[in-house]
Image (cartoon, rainbow, N blue to C red):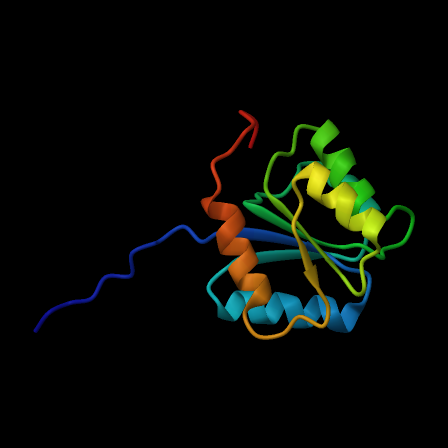
Length: 135
């Protein structure tokens, strides 16, 4: 009889920032079901105040969060040399937001998050070659 060993395959670590508790929990659950390791934060300040930045392969950031919006949070993280790919989630993005996100290399996935759009975007961003030496 063949024994099965539980081999530890490193999971992709996702950090979610969304102020809506129901959305945050739903995203966390659905991404964990997909096999990701997930940490979730209610706003940018909660993430920025961490003593040590959490292990993160990809950020999923809501545009409409308290204190600073999602695209500004991503800019602050880039200034802090956090180079993990980031995906912005929002409803009805303006032309200005779409242009800024495009210029910053941040894809937008529009709410409501239907089907596998977010998971597909995460995989797509993870497959892109990194342009920064910081991780």
